[in-house]
Length: 315
Image (cartoon, rainbow, N blue to C red):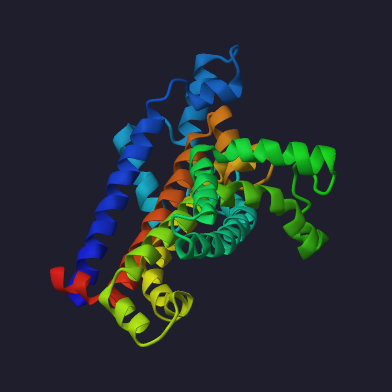
């Protein structure tokens, strides 16, 4: 297990290093200069040069990359060009929206997917299975921002059960905050629930064909009893892996949904920073999201190896 862990940790470090290089240089080659953008088209060259020096933009890209990475290793993400505020403070404020949204969406996805996948597996080839699989196929094919617009149209504009966007803040009350995150969470959860339900069904059907299931049936258990007592527990291993991967995706993938619902989360911060050419904010937030994805994947790999000795023996 130690060897497997060390190999995965090395892979994590290499992935983070490569991701930081790609993020920095892809964003840096984007056209436009932050200092020129901030001062406007009528700014004098000496004024632009002074601002570039103040923002640390007058050094080489290699030096700026090293300064950026070195700061992140010490917990310093830099200072926003536009707001002149430490990026760590901006991220901390907005994380209180993005993190609850991702968690809420993951819970909804799991609650929807588990019964749907189990129901479809227990009725393989029957009408119920066909309906569930058809619904999941639609959920996989339709993008989440389309779900978001449809939910706004139905539940916010027509029924007026929820607001069409915005976030009142947790100071206004927990339930009011959760209510404002409900439509965005469902928009994120539905496509992920479709994927998870299909994985659950497939995993259960694989378990139903195993020898231990035939033994359980031979001992007198009905198909339903064997499914709930034996198949479900063994089928959860790949399903839990997918759940772990989905959480990191929901945290990073909520960017468009936050923009649709005007939520002051990390996604909206990225959009605003791009429009304002605040490159240091874009780089730091995207790197933070990539870091969360890689770390969650690392934790999922370790958890999977802990319950499946075959992975440890292969390492």
